[in-house]
Length: 259
Length: 108
Image (tube, rainbow over all chains, first blue to last red; front, side, top):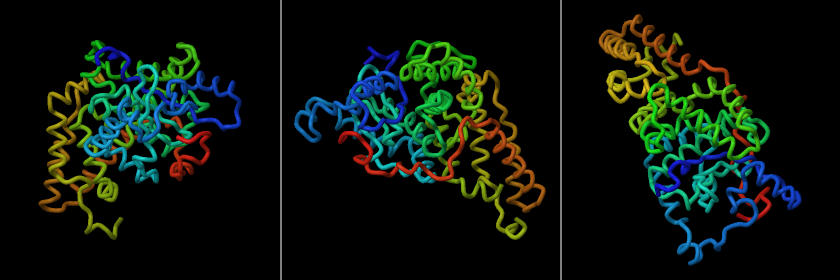
């Protein structure tokens, strides 16, 4: 469990899937260029086990993943707020349609596939409920951005960086406790440094771009995206913050009617 | 909104203002304000809004109402103080609800 702790929260974004008419070579190239190689079950090879088979229940964590996902959706104030906000924006999230528990490569914990409008949860890398809550929140922020804005995941580094900055900022990825557990000790404005760092790593994981170029893009959009707290209205540093934000969200009709 | 003046009530209920004030002053929040922004939080406005809210509850004064409205509009403006990187949509993406086997190369 502690093994991959430094990288266990690798959250990356995925570019839209391409048409099936592309050649095997093109597909391989895209796997490498857009990070699809990290999600073998969605880039052609499919699951090793037939869905519902004994093999699947014995050798994968799919069932556990689904249970933890349900708990997250029912009890996490972060997730509940995001699900509500997405519903209000016309993107009602259905667990069976918009979430997929899969085995992933490496140390990634999840991803958002814009082409299929699905959130991928890496069942082999998420083993604790708190971690699941955070991954679900992180990916729902990407989904929320996809729903409410014209995000060009495929072609725009700026858009990709912006969503990663927001997800790292608002999901609790960079909470003091999480940073300490990664042995990143920092106090004054460390949250911002953490958000920058994680956004950078996420971009480098899925795009073939130099570190310098990625840093430039992150710097360019940081001020704007760090201050975009939608739909929370604040940076939720813990469950209590998130509960306050959820309360505000539920009260939004009264709030805006009386402004 | 002249017609709905008699229906007006504070954007948040008064106890929520007090809750936010206490939360703002808490050690946890003061730590996180420093951790995030490198400064101390400014909680005074929540306290003032609470008293204004209570005053409005007591005598429905226009001054209290306008003071609360101004304070909340400032908060909303603060939340919007950035230039968006992307264009916001008017409608959700067309394929959000599309079934999975449409447009996907292989069955999931």
